[in-house]
Length: 172
Image 1 (tube, rainbow, N blue to C red):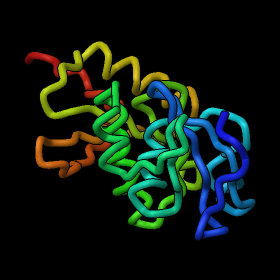
Image 2 (tube, rainbow, N blue to C red):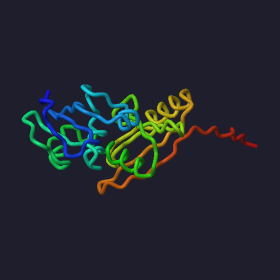
Image 3 (spheres, rainbow, N blue to C red):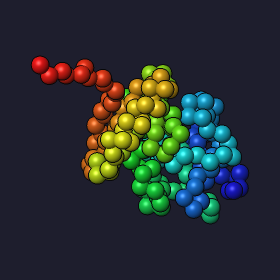
């Protein structure tokens, strides 16, 4: 861990150490900690790190104490999936939504609206069976399911997915 001697010019910023693809919270203001579920000394999920860095709320330092910019963190990013999730996370938060990370890396939760958002790239493959399983799981959890598809330009399209029962068609 970095020496606690780093003095931020912005006392209300989150201070993060980024080492070998992992980020750890060194300091976090109470309001941000409560809103995003961050704790000092704990690892911060990469999509949240990207969001906080992009919006200027976090100051990120490497293990040598050098300050990293958003672009630096992106260059060191090992998991492209995290950037896709960041894209949707940023879009939803920009729209004023309260967003939490779900059980898997590609899952976001809108707790106030009981919505689960699954994030995929436009060139990703998802089978009908996998979609069916996601719908069944969301029904059991009493949430709505939205699939967020991120295109190559970073634009996000949202699709609500639900289960439908069709009446049986009888021949005459």
